[in-house]
Image (cartoon, rainbow over all chains, first blue to last red; front, side):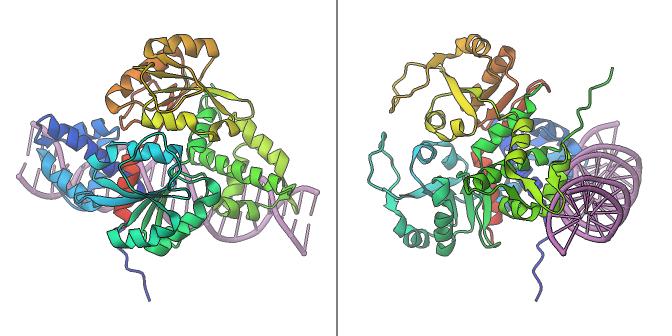
Length: 210
Length: 210
DNA sequence: AAATGTGAAGTTGTTCACAGCT
DNA sequence: AGCTGTGAACAACTTCACATTT
């Protein structure tokens, strides 16, 4: 039995497509209807060839001698990334960081909606009233299934992270954005993106040593 | 005139060194005094050869037939990354995310201390009392110089990010951890690491499409 | 015998140079 | 003429295979 090979797009390309999409939105707001690879590449901080190569991984969208249609290209990238429809997300861990993420208005604008949050102490006092319902951990499976949620954000302490990840995977989550410093082990049908604040700082620390 | 070439260590290696360091700390807490590349690599989620190659970029620390001295290796990596002494950091933008970062106790433990914060409205009400002084933006240069700060965290809205970055660079900052969705332009003597929450989610969104 | 250190091979990602459309 | 699309060259990174040391 062989794995189906969807013509692999490099991970880095996927990241850059998000950046291009953002630039295209800005161009559209400024009323531009077409853009050359050079201009878009500059806006995104990459080389024009890089941009063109990235795009050809999933099709041909340009007109030679002219450039790309802003609206159309944005649409194609959105389709590919799956951000053209609103995506429900759950958040686990409503501490400092979790609360900040819940209050962050940037998500909806990008097509994501946090539909529920979970915490070990769902009723503990929080400094701020929140609009999202906070449930106990044992309701993860139920809520995820009922709402058809496929993505989750983990913002619990390192010690709890793997347990939470297991519960999420069990409930059918396909993608996890992990803010805990723990390394998560998941089946390879599940994608984990980790953001480790300490590592980012440590990395900078190396580069500032003259 | 030629650039001085400090024997380049790949960026990805620097990231992994942070991960190894974390694993070594854990091993030390568990009382282990030596470790083989295979064990350490497994803990870090990489192949043993990767680990060994990473280490040889800056020296030879192992004993053949035996492995590495946990304490010593941790020390060497710390030295290289520059995390063996407490590093003062400033934070700009005390909104939702900024406040969460200020309350995050994980930094100090990793060798970083947020010594001051800046905000366009330093006196606005916050839900929570903070231990770090919050100054107006125009005091960035002064505080950064007085305290010898070399690293900054940007947590302001996209529209303000470049202005803030300019002020920080002007004040002599060498490394910026950027949480705003803006693409920052800085002189190449300054290192920027960006964490873009929307892009991380968008990226997941691609991979969950069955 | 056991594990590290490392040149060489392999793989992945980036850039070049130019052919091919409009 | 101008700009995209792309095979081929190049660069960066990873893995292998094994020589080397304890």
